[in-house]
Amino acid sequence: MKTRFDAIIIGGGILGVSTAYELAKAGMKNVCVLEKHYLASGSTGRCGGGFRQQWSTEANTRLAMDSVARLESIEEELGYKTEFFQGGYLILAHTEEEEKQFAANVEMQRRLGLNVEIVDPEEAGKIVPFLNKDLIRKATWCPKDGHINPFLLTQAYANAARRLGAEIHLWTNVTGIMKKSNTFFIMTENGDNYETPLLFNCAGGYSRTIGDMLNVEIPVDPYRHEILVTEPVERLWDPMVISFSVGLYARQEMSGGVVMGMGDPNEPVGTYVGSSMHFMYEMSKRFTKLFPKLDKLRIVRQWAGLYEMTADAQPILGPIDQIDSFIQACGFSGHGLMLAPAVSQLLAEMTVHGKSSEVIDSLNVKRLYELKDVVKEKSVV
Amino acid sequence: MKIICRCQDVTEEEIIAALRQGATTIDEIRRLVRAGMGSCQGRTCRRLVSQIISRELKTPGSEIYPPTFRPPNRPVSFSLINAELDGHNDNEDDGGKK
Ligand SMILES: Cc1cc2nc3c(=O)[nH]c(=O)nc-3n(C[C@H](O)[C@H](O)[C@H](O)COP(=O)(O)OP(=O)(O)OC[C@H]3O[C@@H](n4cnc5c(N)ncnc54)[C@H](O)[C@@H]3O)c2cc1C
Ligand code: FES
Image (cartoon, rainbow over all chains, first blue to last red; front, side, top):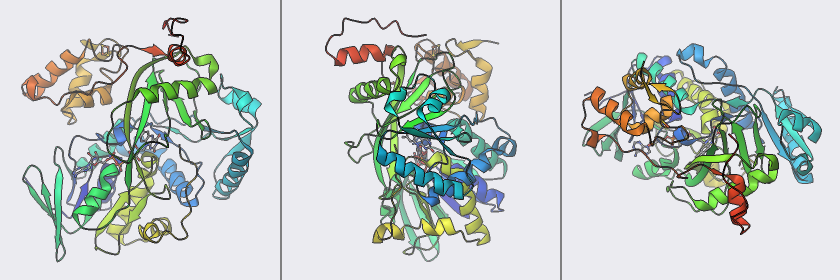
């Protein structure tokens, strides 16, 4: 088995496999992904699958717009079906404050060229039937947002990366890393030791742990985020619906089940991903508040995954000052699937061709050490 | 063509195709081809999927990474949950909207 590579990527989630693909595509010959379980076994395989371009910070909006542009032709490029579907996102404003914030968001998003509009409750009710219109003042609507199947997208990138010569080593848990002169020495639970001059941290909720192995702080904290799906029913609506005030998002899968999740401000930091009764109760209350007529839907399955939060809810990208050639692609704060296509491409162009990127620079970890000029992303559920 | 998962209409060929792409666990089969994602939540097909993995990958069943079991045990409607929260859990059945 080969253990020396030109680049090693820790983590076989969407960031790891897309980065492997982009590196190989950019011409790097020897690339390897190390994943402790199987592909998409972390947050990626547990996520909602949504992609949206409606963000409050410019960096997130830009990355999301570039990602969607890329996703529009990804099936063709990777030669794999992914259930990519642009059903739109409808984001609900319930308060005056939200109305103001959303107006500012839309202005910025339009300046960047996004097709997004503000609609009144009547129109919102047409876009998403069964919605309790009395609860909302306005909504923002982008028809080009949508969703994609996270397992299929991961598999698509992984297969394509392998075709270009990249390797993916599953069931390979990284337990220690040492850097001597220009080489990273990577130890694993299996006893195999790897060597590489270029290391990527794509470990999702475990990114801080990977940093710890090299004695650098990567300020990403894992929080459990729960989600559920109902039994399949006839077509209700196409878009993803988000309400920050009620605190939920919901969309209908192609197969008919309605997937919904919520943020819980009381969730402690930790990597526990079991399911709770509390979530089932709370989700039920919130969903039927927004969709009173859909209270006969039946929950068939609930699960949980990790949100990988940073202080400003934006990712940590690119190199770090303390250690050369240790590249970060982590801290996606609950929206990594939708940013991966653009981020992986930018990182590959940066590391292989030395091309610099303004967005990547603006998301350097430094901002989180200094915590100055940090603008927090507000549009997070 | 042999149907393995009746809830989701998944054939043996589809499962084998997923294994050829590198899947080795019941959870991956569930995620890639949806076998086990139906309303019985894999109660009917889990064993069969496990046997196929074992046969195709030539690993004993006992060595296949165990699947995760996810609540609820039976489908349950929001109205039933809400009624329980309101403290009168006798006012609705969980017949549900199918
Ligand atoms: C319930 C839920 C819903 C979500 N909904 C959305 C959504 O709708 N849209 C969206 O864009 N995002 C969503 N997200 C966020 C999204 O899932 C993540 O941001 C994204 O998957 C991050 O991808 P990743 O590859 O960085 O991390 P992961 O998928 O977590 O991959 C990291 C991998 O690293 C591996 N690993 C960790 N430590 C080690 C080690 N020491 N050695 C080897 N391997 C290791 C893990 O096993 C894991 O597979 C959601 C998340 C959750 C939990
Ligand atoms: S038979 Fe497979 S989920 Fe029911």
